[in-house]
Image (cartoon, rainbow, N blue to C red; front, side, top):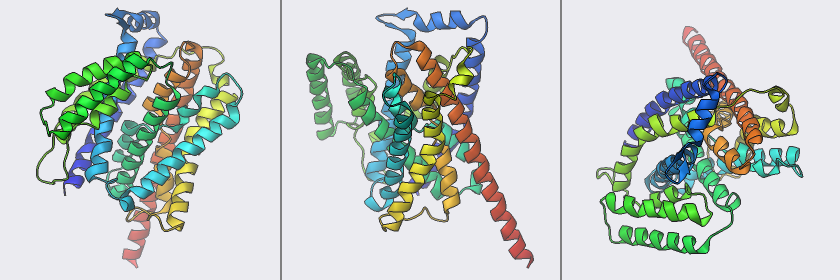
Length: 390
């Protein structure tokens, strides 16, 4: 089946790109806390044309990342796991719970403080890291659980995109917003008239990014809007323009753009008081939101959906494995850091505190999810062997 082949390839890419991301995080932390730290920061602040290097990374390259995310969301809605209400219902309910509960936990600890704007930080799931870790477990985890986590992460990203567009948008410039709308209308017309060549979408897409950047809405949203105008189909034999573009983007996004983002945004200089900051309300909001809020929200909303007979558990899975998947969804990293940068613009110290808490929370979630799923797989094998011996 096409969907099976797609997921096999997707997990292979996710595993190796996740390993590369871990290396980039370690390298970035080492550089930031060495004699090269200031030079590296100066490089990130260095102007390239009208914008700094870091802005090109966070607003430019990440727009391509969001283009790929948008393509994945659209493909899943048209022909994949989200194409029918029955298939989509459990990941959707789970993703909603995985966004609402962490946000409430953060607000509980930080309401009324200077940190309260960061409530979106623990809502996010990092697709690359979470799938990289579950892929390391191989056949010890049912394919249905991997697909559930993938669909959940995609819906989660869609939720994060909506949150960024609505709540982390600065003052709107209506002239540029109107120009963005005009370009978007052009892209929709190209789709309507079944124009298939990518170049006819990419060039207007660049203008869309430019106008969106100046409109006040974060420029990365342009990537998602562009993705939803790329033509696709429901055929299992004919490869659509969307699938061709998705295929082309996987390697540069996973092996260049995300590693560059990790290098540029985890260059945290460890300072006195950072460890103590983890045990502050701000630290609790992020760490408990990601580690506890994600797994509780995902499983609570999944349980309710299943009890109401709106959804079913993934095939050959159990609630223990769902808890493991929920823990892996607590790896926020890329999206969480991205939202932290938007939440505390101009407040470098708060951004660094948030990044550090996100790293710690993601590490706890990743290790605990991995070892729980690995332990469950061992127990299953032991029980099977025992029955065979009898």
